[in-house]
Amino acid sequence: MSPSRSLLLVVAAVLAPSASAAQLGPTVVRTGVFFESYSFGPGLAFNRITEFTIPIGITQRVGQRLVIDVATAYASATTDQPGGGRIEHAGFVDTDVRATVSVVSGRLLLSFVGTIPTGATTVPDTTIPLFGATATDLLAFTTPNFGTGGGISSGFAAAFPMGGGSNWAVGAAASYRYGASYVPVTGGSSLIPGAEIRARLGIEGRFGNGKYFRGALIYTTTGANDIGGGQHSAIGDRLLGYASASLPFGSSHLSLYGWDMQRLRARNFEDSATIAVPRGNVLALGARFEKPLSPNATVVPLLEFRHELTGPTDKMELLGYLLRGGADLRYRLSDRATGVIQAQVAFGTLQDESTRVSVVGPRLGVLIEWSR
Image (cartoon, rainbow, N blue to C red; front, side, top):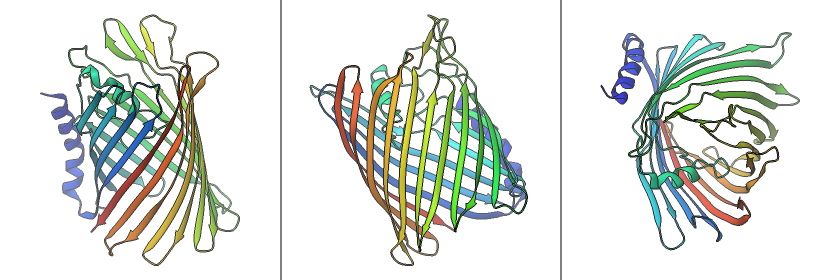
């Protein structure tokens, strides 16, 4: 039996009893089109990277305690290289099927996720530069990953109000992911992914006159991947801190946010049999201003600065920085449908060893959400 069929049967076995025994509730369907393209100055291995994504998502409530989410996307990506060469890939990405169970309403949630490998499990080695470029945190492509061997994860999330009549609450969450083995490169060895554990601790609540704060710390550790031949690939533990504040301005709201991700050295990075992802640091600071234009329309100007460092030594070097600005326009099409139009442009700098080049490009999108 194929890995994809095995995962599908596991997911179906978990979800089917609950879905058949409870009454179906509201359904939400989401889809859209996103286009993003970056042009680079001379000196890199590519002149342009372009990605086109059609996301597809369905959320179904079953009874009072169960919510089922299905999410996938069709994505196409290309890189134009100096001299006229081109690397291309197109197809569906992996499909996530998530079941969220409310054990104690508002206090404790359990989640189960099955990732079905409907994406690019095995690809030619010529596409590796393309996949590496789209996975860069600095550029933040809509589709950073095109496929794996699938997997299963489970976890919990709990929230508790702080005492004394406070409007604040603390939360904790943890999850464990097991990835199925697969052959990532045509003609290559099988890859056995390492297990991943993620823990989150957060706090949120109201302060001042209608202001709202949310903060969290997220710790992720991933086991080494067995890539065959006695070799392993490894990534260090990651620690991400996030904070945001929502400030009212009449009928409008200003949201300020920032996050910083530190990627530590991989364990056994000095071992000759280990291919280690270098240390890294990604910082993002942004602002969004939601202003109603009418009962049905809201415009959201936004601005974000993103900065990334990387390197195997104690002193990391600049990978690049990016400033992104633009606006979203949300419009209520009907009682059941909402549309969002997104237009952004980003510009900045990328650095590859001693070569520093400019980068500029747009992100355009249309998203429609329908509920019944």
